[in-house]
Amino acid sequence: MGIPKILIVDDRPENLLTLEGLLEGFVVDLVRATSGEEALAHTLDHDFALILLDVQMPGMDGFEVAELMRGNRKTKHIPIIFVTASYKASEHIFKGYDSGAVDYLLKPLNSKVFRSKVGVFIELYQQKEALKDKTVEFDRKLVELEELQQQLEETNEQLLMLSTTDGLTGLLNRRRFDELLNEEWKRGSRTGRSLSLVLMDIDHFKAYNDTYGHQVGDDCLREVASTLMEIPLRVMDKTSRIGGEEFAVLLPETGRQGAMEVANRVRECVDRLQKPHHSSPTAGNVTISIGVASLVPALDDPARKLLELADIGLYRAKSLGRNRCCYHENEAVSAPKVAVDQT
Ligand SMILES: Nc1nc2c(ncn2[C@@H]2O[C@H](COP(=O)(O)OP(=O)(O)OP(=O)(O)O)[C@@H](O)[C@H]2O)c(=O)[nH]1
Figure (tube, rainbow, N blue to C red):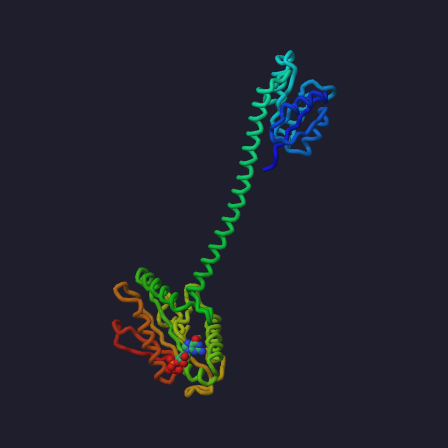
């Protein structure tokens, strides 16, 4: 906060000197003017805490100066104390208030009254400035707070993303898959609609790693994941990497036929990549085996039941020679049955 400035205006230099003397001891910057015009010019260059304005001046008098200042946005709130001869007091006081004076001082000036009044205005100015500083500080803090809030939201979003995404492939991870499976299981038990799971596993992936190295194995996992991502599915269908070389597509509101269509499409797409796998005993290229299961979820059963059924289908697809899709029927519905759809 700067030192308060006071403008003293009087056409007589000796009166200015008197005012200066009376103001001695106040920590203020004084600016002097000997005419109304000069006073107005100073108000353009300075921000005053107070103006002590002589009423009677040749040319523009104090009333005119005050009125012009009240009409200006920059100066209309500066407090003005009129300084007037006591014999003119009754005549000047009402006119002065009309033109914007906040107080009066009568000549000859009484030092005690003068200093007390000026002191009040200096204090008011300082309080106003302190409030202004606090408002600026508050606004700055508010902006900072909003930025922090934004950063926090972004960090939370990233954390959520990291905690649900598989780092290698960008697919949903096992944790998210388990959550989704449970959510969809509950939803399916409410709607009575089928929930299907397509569970897939890259064939002879250990041999692939042993032949080409772990790094190339990682590349292969990414390529299979990209292929899965490119297969058009509904928004509610979710693809995850649920194990080392194991992937899953969860298909809400989908029955056996729809799930087998997705499974066959996925198997064909990976096969069509014709990615060499020279150490595979069953094919010269990378292939996947798929187990499929479909259930109308029941709240009494655990969601993992669907996973277990699909896993049986996958085991069967492996044992029948790999690179195929096997649907495993729920034993509670009909006799145990595995349907092989594709080689
Ligand atoms: N490169 C790489 N390999 C992985 C990753 N996670 C698991 N694996 C490997 O995947 C292989 C899985 O091997 P197995 O479970 O024996 O199955 P498989 O060789 O694919 O044989 P089948 O499933 O019977 O066809 C293991 O050698 C694991 O080390 C991974 O993130 N990157």
